[in-house]
Image (cartoon, rainbow, N blue to C red; front, side):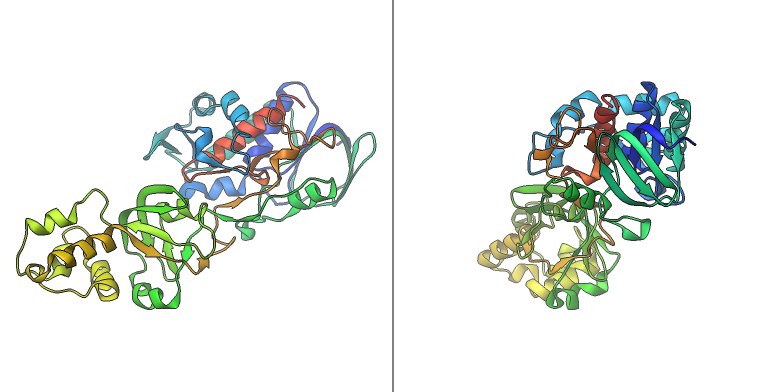
Length: 389
């Protein structure tokens, strides 16, 4: 293998491979460097092993960034339909699960195999188990690695964030950004389960595995999906979504009976039935028993005063919880924050201060909602970059 390349991409994940494919298609001599033993490890575990590879409702308002306009250009130039066309080209069967989320009928490995096949067809070279020790720049970039020294005109950092460290995630991309004078926004776990304080956990900790549909709100944003109790707190799609908007010490508000006018329901059913039994018509008996124990001691429905019913309705539709924290990067699906987009071109992902240096994918301060949005950002940012290298 020659050690001189026109393009080197660090990171054989979704964004890195896609960028390499696009650059390779344009006749560029491309090398992908991957520190792990195989490509796409996060792709392989995504979507429960079936890879939620995009979302048909992808739009800029489904992404979080200190600059909400940054992702607009890339997302417009490479859409979910573009990636679906590639999936169809490789005869990968897929289905919509819910809310626009597309999954492979088979396994995530189909997406990795597709990307590697596209890399091969585009003449892209990939080396594995290769750690980068140092990067410097004169006319070109010089990389000192465990596989020797490499040189390139254009260098793309697609090393991801620091979520799920057991899959090999590191802060490499952030370190390179700092070395070349780029700023970082606040970095924190995103799409992550929330933990509860001891007071709530002593009551609800025994409900691990119990779920219910709810509307969860925080900082003016709401999600209507399921909530799941864990042995440490709360998870499930609605909680993972809201976690990206939650700040430590702030409360989240949970409507545990969305769309149900409980005042009217009680008025129409003034029986001697115990409240917890009545509410079990709408919620798990195990959950409502604990909820009543904590917030509204059960009594016969026909013994509730008008004031009691109003208070009950308020508590059910506005259950306020202040989480104690999150389960951290070990359980976070993504890293929120990253390379400050003020230092990058939104059209090419190139660093404004350092010609030929690019950052794409999760390492950048663009974080998508749960449900295929982060993969769409990987494809879109990789495409934008790969077409100008």
